[in-house]
Image (cartoon, rainbow, N blue to C red):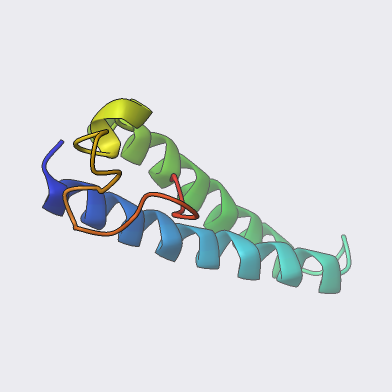
Length: 87
């Protein structure tokens, strides 16, 4: 995967995480008999499906490839791989 692809994958995954997080919050606040619950569940299903599709389109790189040159401990972005989000 090219460095830009990894960044786009990461950014898109973050946005889906936000959508899923808000859907979870809404589902805890909406009673089971609320008519809006089905809509929030559809949002949650769509975001989960998009996350699964993202994994197919932009598969994760093995750690060795993601970190770039192991002797320098830097990724292709020039940042240390320590503490970076892996997904």
